Image 1 (cartoon, rainbow, N blue to C red):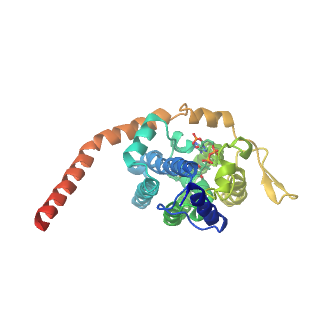
Image 2 (image 1 turned 60 degrees about the vertical axis):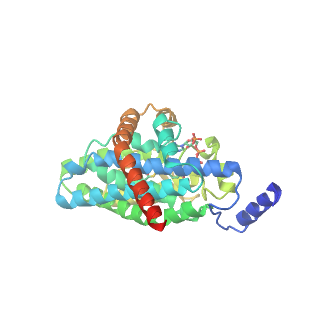
Image 3 (image 1 turned 45 degrees about the horizontal axis):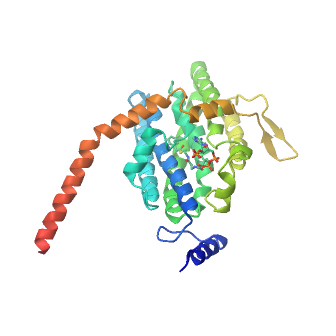
Length: 315
Ligand code: FAQ
């Protein structure tokens, strides 16, 4: 087949809404965009373990601790499925790690904020996982098959994560005055950063248009942000907590909530590496990678030994 007919075959699959698989021909930019997004997503899962890991030893009781441990372990698993999906596009795990550590590949802005109270475990689950689900359920139908299939299981687990966070908020919001205050303070700090997770406004999003055409993204950043606000306002009402946005108002004409503008300077500053925890997060990841070197070497030596033994036996 010529490149032209390869392209036609790809376009035909796109038109018919069929999945592109690892062995299929694909345009270089499609491959690059997927590697960028999936690697960023995978890095977000493993860096996202850090703000919560901070609270495992300080969870208020055994039940809370067991749930938080399970959640953080799920995130490690999500990272693994996603790194595998990215590897199927021809990039190695080592390359992705190197690019995370050098700052070339990103992870979600949200994980550069500190978790300073137990209520933050509630807010992270409720809002951060809530935003993640809103963004990720449509990714179960993204055009690249291995990414779409990884997302199916991830979304099921994210849904449990969101509920466990909401349950923490519900308990605090119905607790003592002090507990309710903690929950409100946490909502105040996590609300705007959660809205930023969806990415810049569509007008300033360089990748959205092409990614929508390729069906990598099924909805734009602004569409998903609006959906998130619409469902979360009701959840805050049930908690009896106040969303820290004076412009938040039901709009009868659009059938959606109007809301204020996130501080996009803060967002871009975080992307440049200047958020409150950027340095700390990357330092921890680099150290973990260095300290895990002997494990990777041992695993390789063991598989090499097994291969040699098998070859000897066969000969
Ligand atoms: N943070 O043109 P767009 C989770 C960058 S997982 C950092 O709109 P795109 C689970 C973007 O990369 C959360 N950077 O880009 C969990 C691009 O820069 P580049 C992660 C961001 O790709 C929960 C530039 O801005 N989820 O939370 C962000 O079309 C709790 C221009 O942006 C995913 O990764 C941001 N928030 O749309 C774990 C989902 N937003 O690369 C633990 C998959 C934008 O050109 C605890 N990803 N940028 O240098 C996506 O859906 C998309 O990549 C978007 C961005 C929507 C994030």
